[in-house]
Image (cartoon, rainbow, N blue to C red; front, side):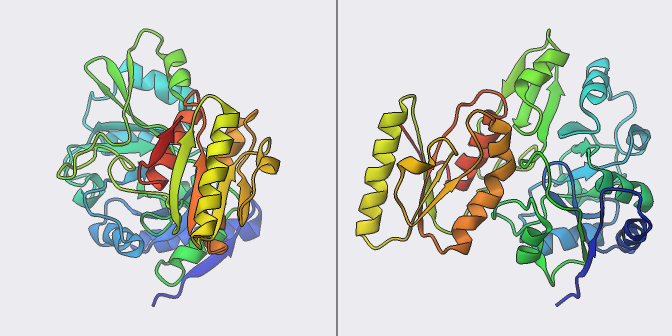
Length: 357
């Protein structure tokens, strides 16, 4: 059992916070693991150049070794030591200018020997981003290292959007936790790769396909389906292959254009589960919460503000676990905008079990 150091910091340059970040950065330089907030979710960081440190991430999370890690940097000057010379095109630069710092991960050809091979899972590419969070940026600058950082949760569980979620999963298994309060976006970064003049969204996230198209209007954009990676293949980006974000209870999604039909189907399903002796839960939205009966009905944001659904999704999924709910039915959302990322995460959480009406 590891003694996990815990720091509470303000999103400012206060002396107490600066001291805490300096201590956390020192742990990272010593090859330890430290969880820290980003604008998407909390990440579990380690020195991306240190294989022993990177392996601690996999061990703490129980993460499959063929699942690559995203590398976080403080500024674009660090790219030259991580990716192949001349691999950054004008299109890459346009995306970096528009979305860095921010929730966009760009997959680039890795510079041989620059990172632990466990970061890339044996691929010839690496996903890199600059997070848009003051605490994360201060920590990265202080550490002076490229930091590999997947979400700071047990593999397969809902990602952490509060430090308390990290503690729930990883206390005693990692070196430290930097508590910077709630994260903002609530779902992970969008992962993209440019191939032969076309843009592939490998994982939908905080930057939408519509926003990407706005920066590169002439470029064709492909959005990968959540089930596209075969069991024997190494995924090109995190979140493409394995079940993720899942509550402990059985969950499936119901999706359709007619709200009345969807709600009636969900209520019949929940009533039947209750009759079988299940503890029941419904994941819905603020506008619809009063129309349901179950042991636990959770409103996850508002349909009129889909960004609130993304922000509250993982905490809502964890609530079902805290209440011991064994059978969960979730309402689906439109795939437009941030809805693409929301549905990607819901499908992963439900093991792709979806009923379309």
